[in-house]
Length: 113
Length: 207
Length: 100
Image (tube, rainbow over all chains, first blue to last red; front, side):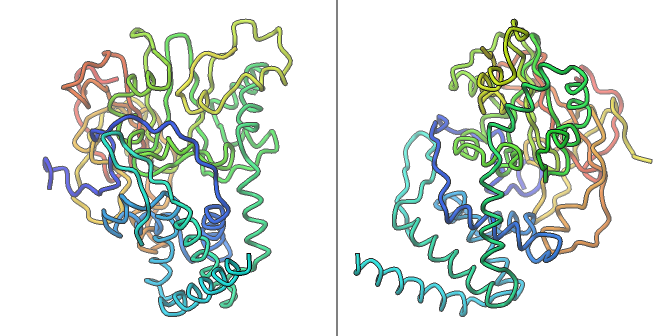
């Protein structure tokens, strides 16, 4: 407990000391849009599988190391997959299998180019 | 999965390097494939959802502001129920409520989300990277005038500064002051004067 | 019937809750003034753990004096901060001195 205010998450940075604001505008990449699109679809009225609140809980609890080293959309992606696995919607095994297959396809493509 | 990132005395923005972006693309493609395999999504839905995410942007915010500057009854409706007024312009709004906060000669508004990155995405699209940065989120509530100065805005001491932390269900747009000679311009001309930074509150004067 | 109305003086509680909450650390224990009632919403603390059948909660915007939030910093007296606080995180207090 800090000052009797209760637990403070690593994401809860309002008022913390910080340096200059990085004046950058990053482009919004396709995979990032895909993450947001899929999160939105999974949370929509026809599905209600993962809510934005659950994704937030995900990145607020997956650890400060991840929080400080992953980009914003990567955090959303990690949190979303964590929650989907936690809720038994997908399994770690089947996701890993699909990722491995994807890596193989990518490196095959790489070799051809 | 280590990624290159910048450290230093200045608060760095975490940016994926090429390997990180490729890895993330592979992961999201794999996740999408697994979800499609379970009948929870279709590829067509994902494509359509991406198109919807890409369509809002500054042009919609500028349209709202220019109309508020030239139509006093619209402005009044905008300030009392932002979401309904914005939808009058055929802009689909997904957020529960939109609160439009008006700048005046004596008052300036600044929007932030200290806990994550809440932003009126269905109107303005994605927030700028700096809005999501830890430095902005940490300092915008505590030392907003210094933050504004970093954006080149030196707010006079006698102007009241109100910071809005969008931590829950409301989303915010700043209505900047119109140019003093607003009646000289067409709506299109007015729209070009409005930047995204005006709508967040890190810029003030227009035109 | 809501517990609070615009103009009421309130204090933000520190509920000591673990897990996902949307009340930042910096505002807990602070006293301010309700500026508006925002409506009733599902509680993010419930939604974050997949509970969509919890009771909906009243949400208010509450204004605070920046000088009071950050007493060690040199801040103009009239500057304020407005943030959204759910009903169960608020309690009524007697009129606070110099509230915005």
